[in-house]
Image 1 (cartoon, rainbow, N blue to C red):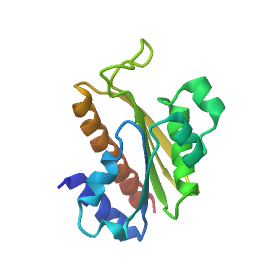
Image 2 (image 1 turned 30 degrees about the horizontal axis):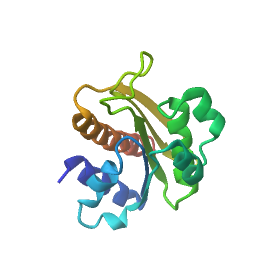
Image 3 (image 1 turned 45 degrees about the vertical axis):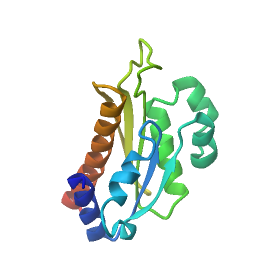
Length: 163
């Protein structure tokens, strides 16, 4: 069981909050890590697996012009994924992840291993971060799940310290 998922669950329970995920390159890996934790239904609302651009548009409301201008693997897209996940759920906190896990699909500007993350609180601030992850497809996806959960933990810890 993923210790980060347990930690995130404990923090969310302490707030009485729930989490929603919007995943692309991880294909539901974050939701899987979360639901491995017994009792996670008390703090995990739902997950959106929006692998295609059309799914990002239809399920999360990511604007087509954002996808055309910036691409699916971009700060602008993951920010809109967070906003869409929060507006299409009852959750108070969301995370989004979109990247290029490989082995194909990389470009000079966005090589394989480029992954964008965003975390946000409903009616609050959204934070985004880009990572260049090394490894094969599976390794990149596992690392991305860990970074996504770590970001939720850090955001919740920051909220605790400022509250």
